[in-house]
Image (cartoon, rainbow, N blue to C red; front, side, top):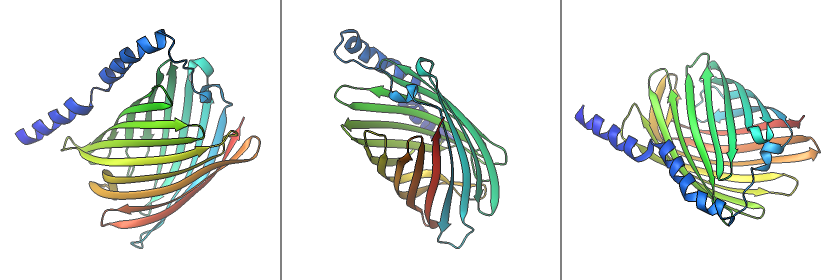
Length: 275
């Protein structure tokens, strides 16, 4: 019992005080902004048109289990200087079971970055988290650099997970390169580390093409009500294309390895409509 308490204390000491970190970053940035050395404006997404996205995903598992499938809908409501509201709903089939999840997030822009608060609720949580809440800070740095601090808690049927992450990014003309380190734990156990690297190309008319590679140890529900920290590897190609001015096509394909349990090959197709 003493060992467990020591591990929990260490994890909280290193990663949990997200609010204190955000405040420190604000203090560090304030002289820069006040001196006029960097002209920062809110991201263009806060002034964009509202949008609705609907789509479908599927995964084929190599252990001959039933395919994973999902249907989803996202609503994005930019409120200009008042922030950004996003709503999400999804009907998910995994392991021969069906689950429904709804979620929402709210983002507010500051001169030095964007803060986002989000959460979700699942009606029949056989394999998804029955509820989750997260807080994220996206900070800006000079010369196209930025950073991200995030803390999230997920409650499953049999356990609770805590996930903290620290990310850095570089934006250079039409390209964005980002790296994120993710520390996760189940019921206060010793934290496990995972990594995510992303390269993205963004055109002037907002066509996007990206590749993401993730690896490390993360909490995963490998079967119904069976949450474990396992070694994962994941690679994804994704894109957003606008064949019509206000109608975009979202597409992705991926390959994942879930420890020694199974591999999965999947894809996504969706439509994004500007209102």
